[in-house]
Image (cartoon, rainbow, N blue to C red; front, side):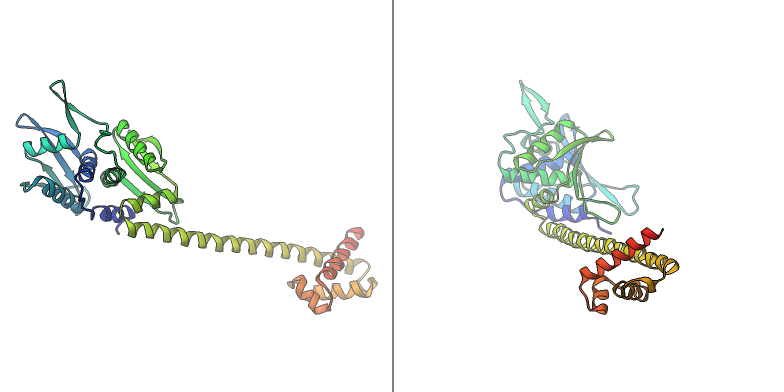
Length: 313
C-alpha cells in the first residue's frame, strides 16, 4: 500500500523547471539529502544513492536539460526490503565537479576547495527557488502523515544529519511565513510542522495539489466525525440525566407507596405518581401530553413527590 508520503513525493517529482535558478535549487536539495561528495581521478565529484525511479528520472531529465547529453551507468543493488532496489550513480568527474560548484556544495576560497554545508543565500533568493529547494529536500529526507484511528494530528518533517542544514530549512520555511519547530531525534535534526493549514499551504506551493485536496478532505471528514461524536456524547449525557432523574422519581414514589400510600396524596400528585410508574421512560414532554398539563407543572409535581419521600425517610 502506497503511503501518503510516497504520493506527495511522486507529485513533486512530476515538476520540471523552466528557470535555471529553480532547477539548481532543486538539484542542490537532492544532492544534499541523497548524495555524497566523492573523489574520482583526483577530482571531487558527486555520488547519488536513489531508491525511487521518479527521483532518478527527475535528476536525469534536469541535468540533461541544462548540461546536455551525458552517460551514466547506475550500479543497481538490492536492499534488505523485499523487492526494493537502489541505484548508485557516480557522475563523470568533470560533470560532477561542475554540478557541485553550480549548486554551491563546493566553492573556492583562497585557491582551496571548500565544502559548504550551509545553503548559499545568493543561490536561493526568490520564493520560487525556496519552494524548489524545500520540496526536493522533502523528497530526499522528508515524510508526512495524516490523522488515523491510531495516530492523532497532522505531521510533516525533514530529517537531517546536519544541524546547520536543519536550521537553513527552518529559516527558508519562515521566509514563506510557515513556522516550524526543530528537535533532535536519534542523532538526527528534525524540522517539523503540525499545523494543518501550514502543511496544506506548503503542499499547494510544492505543486502537490492532489495530495493537498486529500489532506483537506481528511480534515473535513474528521471535523464532521467529531461533530457527530460530540452530538452522540451530548445525547448520551442527556439520556443518562433523564434515566437518573426518572430512577430517583420512581424510587420516591415507591417510598411513598410503602409508607403513607399513594392514596394519601392529593389528586394531582396521585395522578402524577401513577402516570410516572406506568411510563418510567417517558420524558417530561410525553408526561405533560399524557396529563394534558405543561412541562413545568410535571417538573413541579415530580419534585413535590421527591420532597415528600425525603421527609418520610
